[in-house]
Image 1 (spheres, rainbow, N blue to C red):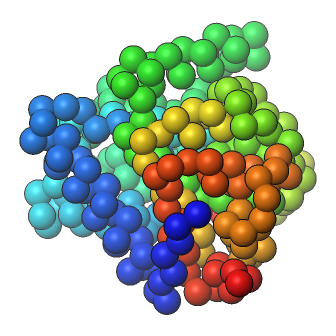
Image 2 (cartoon, rainbow, N blue to C red; image 1 turned 90 degrees about the vertical axis):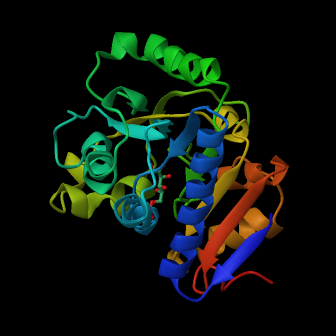
Length: 249
Ligand code: F6R
């Protein structure tokens, strides 16, 4: 997997934001929409901050952007402080000119009986727009991408997933330090939809990610580390800082 190592995660984030901005502008010139797959969590925050700066200071418009987020906790009310809906509004959408009807995040507040249909329609909507032009990813300390936890298959579809203990433990501070308050499930885009994106960029900062980054880049493809499935993608880039690269050979 092609990997770029930066000493400063902010510089790394800027280069990723600039790649996204160039893609948005290219699609604008072609009169097309730019279909982005987006992630939450701490890793992409600096990318979103740079995109906001490009909008404010350099006139980058998001009018032709349509976006699909990877995941949402289940159950989760959209206006709860931990919701990914709220995260995306605060970190990006409320600060740029993306039309409100152009962004989609899995719904954490639908009845369980509707989840299967919802997941099918989420994928169908992506397909109807010609698929994802660009997918931004973070990586879990256990190798998850989206909330495709270890054990997820390469052909997995968008679905309800039981979260690993380690994933819930990593989120505990967002829930007042109480593990019992961290949702046990999430709706996640499947591995197959992620792999169908025309371009995939995965971000990883810090030593906590080093083991899984080395395993994904240099190890064998295995369901034990879902990020290793990216080895089969022809246009993927890992953007990491020195700490996250520290276990690469
Ligand atoms: C978030 C997501 C997750 C995170 C991963 C890393 O939408 O899909 O896979 O990218 O858990 O999270 P951070 O960036 O907080 O370390």
